[in-house]
Image: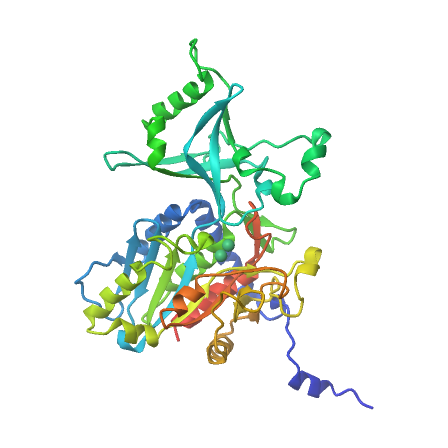
Length: 462
Ligand code: MN
Ligand code: MN
């Protein structure tokens, strides 16, 4: 019996490591691309910073704010900031908006610790900020890691005071303390979810008392420091949005530097890929739309989340300028829900089905569906949509892979995909596979990051 090698090659689907599929030029290109990404991630520690940094990059490429009533002509580069917390950009295509848009939608919020609205208190001559975690975190991962604070305080007169503490190397850093192992018998006998109660996730702010004989002397000293620097009082925290985020700079990881390690890859990595793709776009046929959305980690709610009509408002304004009905534009549009997926981790092989899971260095991950158990709570893209992607990616040398969110009964999650498909937009999930997702220090492969940029650009150019 002979080995029918040719027949196997013809009939079987085999995946190859991405590094075996590219040449020196692309190796250089992917390194360069990730250098830009590292800078963006360091400058985008919150959704507000992700928006302002994106606007800065977009304006440098000729994008202008769009207001209702402006003309919408081919080649125009437009954007609209939604309250400084989400952003929509468009490059107007040569075809009418009636023929639909190519959309990529990523989110720029990330798991973190928000300060409570009355955060400052003193306990045993230590001053603390109380926190309320945002998004799905393993709380214990946030103990004993350096933190920095980013956010805004809105004063009663409407003025916003911007707060950034800990980012500059000369700034102090902040931390939540943990129990020493020597005395952790009770703590370590608990389930991991109970290792730290949310109400104990208090950020240590200081220990030097104010020089007087009153009460809460350390709290007073800390509040005095904040008042000196920012002009705020304790009451001003009532109308503040301040986030504690890991204080790690984005760095190469691995002896071969094949990974980028940092805070907030989910989902600023896809946000940067689609942002760069639209900035690098030249006169597309279909109008290209890039969405950087807020609040995905808590269900895409709120005015800045993907369920908000702010998206309809922007798109309808563009359609009105061309005399097109929004519903016709949506019906003919295509959307990449650009969000990260889990990367196969051999150290935790039991949570995934290896053949179906996305793997690092195998390219942009496509997920036909996310959701839970029997595909509950997901946009399950149709075969035609997947087929279209296969054609576009293969025509443009985009290395990509089909992924799935772990074993069927292991858990699950969602993205903005179902909110886009509810608008009658053909939608599919696509993005960068991540190791240690939602941890204070996440990893992505440089190869997959670059391929996701290439993939979004190929969609925009289709
Ligand atoms: Mn997430
Ligand atoms: Mn995400």
